[in-house]
Image (tube, rainbow, N blue to C red; front, side, top):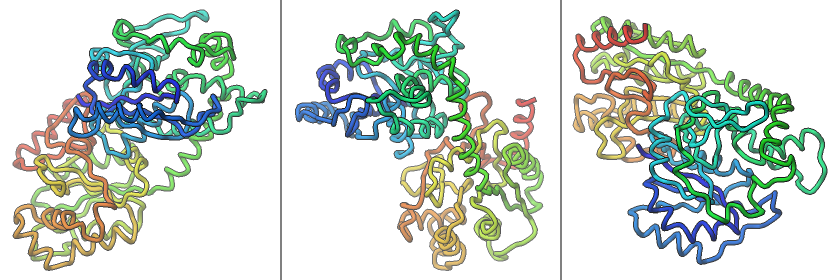
Length: 482
């Protein structure tokens, strides 16, 4: 399993962290470690000051790796949430869809076994922590397995699709806190909320799982016990005092979440999503039941399903070439059109596909790598998300109507049909196509293997199978969900 670690630190504490970075490095096998620093620290009223020794030591340890492992990232101050927001943003900006994000503190030495356990016990419905707890009669009560609260110091593990836009929105309220003045009830609540990240994260994610003996797999450094440590806050006396205040006044957080939710709902409902496919009666034996499943997924999520077998635009080409004119016919009347091949279906318990779209609002095309992907242009066009823009229509029209591109596509690989033409466009970066695209790794959006249980892609694509096998797949899946 691949993962990145994300931590936040200050001008003072980064020197301590860097002094221990070799030991830290020996105890993790993360692909990346994001060290989040802020140009200005609001609570401390300090500007970022970096010793050149810090940069040299990061460069030195990165020489061990083919690509830099330790990334010093300057980001906006969100208090303790900075490690979550910084990691979230890095994951989205770098399309790390198959990685897990583990947020950690800057004053703890962790065992790699802890990271492995966090990922092993993570599923698509929960987040995991090395230390879960409940509050019973006002007292801290450790909990394994299902718990009410997670503790950031012991690590918290998320999947890519867990990354929350709601937490990102709430984090922006940190900017309005004035730590130098006595405040009204709302500002006072925000101060308490941002004393740590545990309460907010625990509130946003309904299903939380604490691993057993996780705290035995970490060790706190002495500098984590100094006066700047958040757990030494005096605003409410103790951490439990802070939790009690936040719980007693949770109507403020509920109101805040409701405002953000309403705004997100307004934006989301403005998106008109269509999902569709074209096929003829020759493959209706499996395409009809696949289409029925896709229609169910659309109804569940408020999307519109469209299928067609009548209009044939390219009479002298293979049926696969009907894909692009079909998309063009329906793109005008929606914000996003999603093409899905007739031999593919959404798992009914898949998340909303808008969860992906919302993370990349300026993207025109969302592509999926093919199962065999030796080159960056090895795209599988069995599943495409297209934004309704003038740019996307120009690309689609060229893909559909350019005869030279059609002929070159046949030379590239005749039985890939329209997919060959698209690969040529992408490889040559026609009209800066790569800049306007997001390419997802094979297995995130679609996969050619039928799966049940957790950690599935959005769709199963029965590419390369016989009609009989495709019919068997739908029977097998329907049995699995009864």
